[in-house]
Amino acid sequence: DTAVSQTPKYLVTQMGNDKSIKCEQNLGHDTMYWYKQDSKKFLKIMFSYNNKELIINETVPNRFSPKSPDKAHLNLHINSLELGDSAVYFCASSRLSSYNEQFFGPGTRLTVL
Amino acid sequence: GQQVMQIPQYQHVQEGEDFTTYCNSSTTLSNIQWYKQRPGGHPVFLIQLVKSGEVKKQKRLTFQFGEAKKNSSLHITATQTTDVGTYFCAGPGPHNNDMRFGAGTRLTVKP
Image (cartoon, rainbow over all chains, first blue to last red; front, side, top):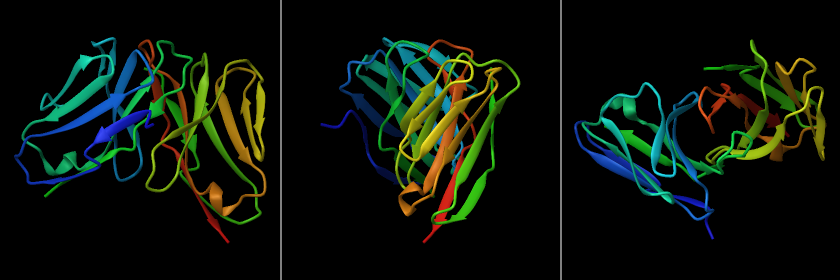
């Protein structure tokens, strides 16, 4: 049983396209996150949701739009993809407390050509 | 928000040597977490430190939280090839349920 799952695992697309990445967690957690990890391995928070409510919205281009249909799902839609969007995107979840560990999904490697 | 600085960025060791990565903050941290990411993998939680001066051990890994709660370290004794990966510390950010990751230390181990 995968705790945090993401689809797809790999995504190769052309500049200008629109794409979505899906994330689901079966841990019963209230908080979900999206992180971007660049080629230098830096993990940058993008968004977080608590019970479907947007909590963290870092300086991310508005081409990126998260959507949380329920607290077990947090999807990421990206419009008009650019070369600089190429990265690994990780979804994560945690219980509702700063003292709780985050559980990461396997990542989605996005390559924009 | 709070930011944790992590050094070194890279560390290459011979198998059997020790390894230490350091995490520093300019402000007091309520807690600090450590994660490990294997090559091609995802970050996996290792441990959390909460108390001033806390020391926790996991087999060959020793985690410390400074007395002032502004720094932390992860020390691996007698590294093995299975220790290869990037080690991240994470400290609280400005929002609830918000942890901000350091830049990570990438460890390579030569057999």
